Image (cartoon, rainbow, N blue to C red):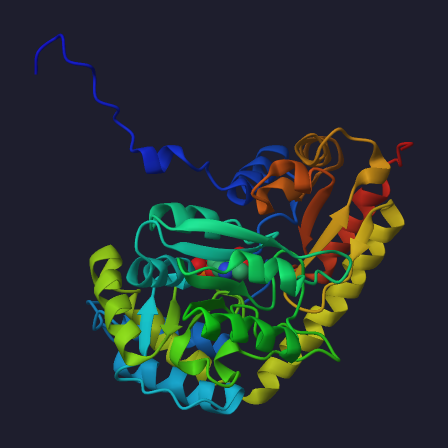
Length: 395
Ligand code: PLP
């Protein structure tokens, strides 16, 4: 290379288009200040004994080599059996399931497998922060459609305007992170009608399917008439079984889409940890009472944190599902959410996620922050005590 030639940029344009995860950064900030981490959504309580034992036994039994790239057969069979009772869907484990490294890999693999560069994907906003980088990495053009507080509803007219002949897919997160919204059957049917009219797919992240509060109930997009053949369900062990560090997830999709996802997945990661897939089989066999207890426990934690936040002066949007609370911080008089979150972690000792990280335009989330309540009651009580110290600033 001659000295006259311009230097090559060592970093791709793609990688320059998004920032590091703000959520994961807040976890590092929490560690730095010894703060209670109500930012990143991972439990601080134990995972179920049965599944930990299954993981230990798998390693002791030398389940230590690559599993089949799209997932160990017993695990895929167990997923299909569980989906039969929980969603009433018949899934063929041989042709319709791909086991991935968490739903994080599941979503990006699904996008890479289905969306071509310059096709559009619709994303409801506020959105789980991974979807925007996922769109950039897969070359898709994101189109954002707002969910309007207080009920985080979408305006069907705004949604209609987002669909066009380049729309390849809509990304749904149901139950929703960060808002706690649980999409109703009517809402799902209205989204489904647009998908069918525009021949678009629905990539639905249902990682919080079992964390839903009465009287709401989870309905999968794949259960809506005409949608099974155009839906990819992305799910994971992370939240339902409190094992976010295991990195085991799965995609459920019709055979043609599944074979594309399997190819992408194979060359991205080869496969998820084999012994933890064996433990995943045990997880899928947990009795139904496990899920009822999970919901009851989360309902208690939700009340605890809602009360603490309201008492401390936050405006709260009561979640119907998932384990987050979006809050309005406008009473505290901070110029934006980042400044507020930095002050909260440093001076009060509680970490939250700045709202702007869930929006395509930071200004939209500048007076919002998100807290998670996937913590032991004692952790939430300690956080409540600290939040109590937060003096209300005049508006
Ligand atoms: N999808 C949503 C909506 C999430 O909230 C999270 C984690 O917070 C993930 C995916 C990541 O899931 P996994 O651990 O399975 O990669």
